[in-house]
Image 1 (cartoon, rainbow, N blue to C red):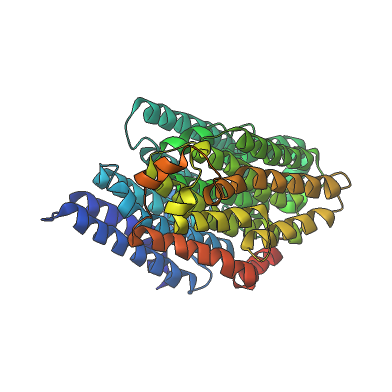
Image 2: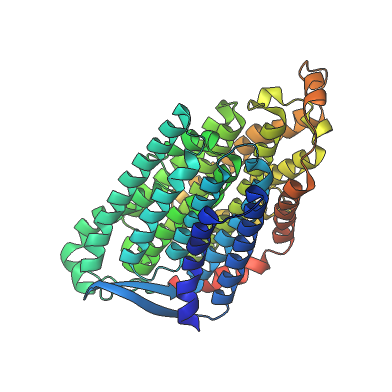
Amino acid sequence: MQAVLLILTPLFPALCALLCWFLPAVRPDRERDRFVLAALIASFLITVALCLTGDGSVTLFTISQDLPVVAASDGLSRLFSILMSGMWLLSGAFSFGYMAHEGAQRRFYTFYLLTLSALLGLCFAGTLVTMYLCFELMTLLSVALVLHSLTREAVAAGMKYLLYSIAGAMMGLLGIFFFTANAETPLFVAGGTLSADAVAAQGPLLLWVLLITVIGFGTKAGMFPMHGWLPTAHPIAPAPASAVLSGVITKAGVLCIIRVIYYVTGADFLRGTWVQTALMMLALITVFMGSMMALKVTVLKKRLAYSSVSQVSYVLFGLFMLNETAFQGALLHVYFHSIMKNLLFLCAGGIILKTGLTDVRDLRGIGKRMPATLWCFTLAGVSLVGVPPLCGFFSKWQLAQGAMASGVSTFSWLGPVVLLVSALLTAGYLLPVSINGFFPGHASGEAALETSCCELKASMLWPLVALAALTLILGLWPSLVETAVSAVAAAVL
């Protein structure tokens, strides 16, 4: 049964995508929306069913004797697959009302489902080669979401996203060549698979390869210096695509980095080396730089894109600390950031849809006409700052605790300081949107907003409310996720 589910889980959304493209209907848009929603719900339920079966693997085919393409289920794959399919479902539910104003819905939903298929394949990849194939497929399919409108700006943004992603994947491919050749088994194993003889003979070379590989996969996660695609792609893509690009697809890069460090090379290979120091420094630079750039720009979705550059590097910093507390904080922030950032982007999309305004300086008084949307935005923003009892506080607390317990003299204090400064900057670029929205004063733009917009319809509001509820519930009861995260951390460290 598990072998069937391992094949069906990534395959099912792809089959639904083909049906979506060819689905005949008297009222195609309405019927297609219902079909896509049913497909997303079914895909989520199939993923949950697979996750309930426990660990296991199945070999799909072999490229050569030492290069099997394997689908496998373990604790890490279960964590990421539930998150990705769940966020894909909620963003998809919001998109039906949004995409009615965008056009080309058949193309959008076909590639939306195909991208989910590739992401689930990535989650359940059992070897480096399988992971790379799914990673590249996910990139090629998700480009269509970025350039959906086919304007000159959208095509340019899509090409930039594609070039950055391919460059990063090529850097990752270098690591796959080296690590596969020097591993004791091609399968992912918690704790690492590098042979002791390879480490003794080629240790310095493998460290360089590891650095290049992590930076390569870090491209998808928006890590400096390969972050440039995010602030270009997010403002151009439709809001549901921006939400999953930031909240989900950036986590694909995080997943690949975890697999390489904790399931191939092993944390002990990296611990205490100059590469660990370099990676932690790059992560902190990205955290600070992303926050500063978000504070500087005034285009709402671009501000949120730079915020993602910063916040995903919180996760990377926790991973690079190589201790159990920081690792747990990193995985928790994977979950919580995905929820918060999906909510922020969907709220931003709703505001732009109703007002046509993209600059935060023009949104004074928006809270009077779209109170529910702005309250959801505010809840996510406050959580992203790290205010208890919302979920963002708990993951950032774990990350700071992990940094202080790391024993790395410089980063044990520098890490928490940078995270605190970034939290203050986050408050500086997110909270004014809510403050000016609810308390506009006598701004000249308020009257125009009162006559030009109204609240989102219920079908678009309920995904926002669901994400807002998750933000609060997981802040009050983080153990709902922490138990699974702790099991993964204990296995790899």
